[in-house]
Image (tube, rainbow, N blue to C red):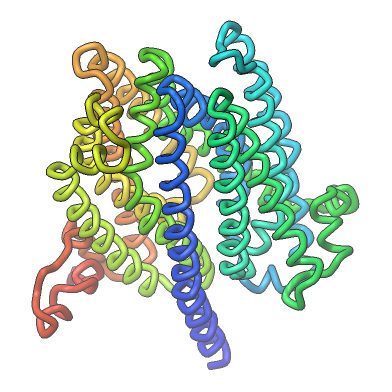
Length: 488
């Protein structure tokens, strides 16, 4: 009885934390998207197309490469620990000692990325600006942001979602004000503004998280915070490391490498086959086309993965299945709406926001195609969130092997179509890629629920289709359709 009550209380805590955290992340995304949106408009109208392409696409890729390959695996692995482990200082220390390893990994990855960038782009320059110096500044910004990674993992697993939202809002506001001011004052050297803004963002995130855990009553105190960031905690407990968590983190890091190739593959092709002004067009289209994705779907995906991880650790499979079904239908519905409006209003949107300088290019057509990709991107986020939360290390490795030919085929398809279709080939390749990834995730989810439930689950495609029925009929065709049991 007490165990059942404890499980119920734990489930209630996770679901309520999911709801409040989702609201905080939605507010963060709303704030960040509009700030970034305004910043991109100011910069795109103020600088030449080539400089915008280098700063917003090429240099940003260096930054994202360091972060993606260094932190994603540790985040996914540490989220799988039970909520009770984070409330026990000794257990928490063992987890955070592993989380700290993301920092030296980031330094290693950053060094390799910077070296490769200098070798491959030996002649790259932009209106007298030193590309290599600016690239080094972006790598430095990534290193600064990674200093806060153990604190971010701690905040996320203590369900301090509002802390993350507020710290990122503050950091983004500083970045936008600094970058916009520098561009307006000195439009001849825009890349320096990009780099300075990125460094300011990273330092503000670190300062906010560090200050909270030191000062706040919800924090862990000065000594533990300093130990976590400095590596003293790892140095003291490395002989007692959680080996299982280290192995899982390593597996997840390898998965993040493959995920990086799948998500950034089109950017690599873009940089290899097209000119900087085309990079700029595609970069603006990504910012516009992914507005709904970043605003609505990203916080939903992050909170879903956190909820799946915690509920699965409590073996509450019915609740997980219900949430999985509801969120899948929600993102498909919103994605359909975004696709419907994107086709008809892309030219007007580009012309109003960016002017004739950009609307006279191929950018409106590219944006129309990108809107079709949004729905697949959204559904993939939810299905992969469940996969990352529920798959074993062996299943993750097997999934990675299955995705290798998918990734290779997608990149090959985009490369072959690029000469004939231009940038649109990248979007078509992305759609094929996302469809295959969704299919693999759904296959995993179906197998998981069939195994975990004593009775067979009628896991249908109806789980992912929005239901347009009056309220009186919703109970009959709602999420329960996904978890309907069949007689043997």
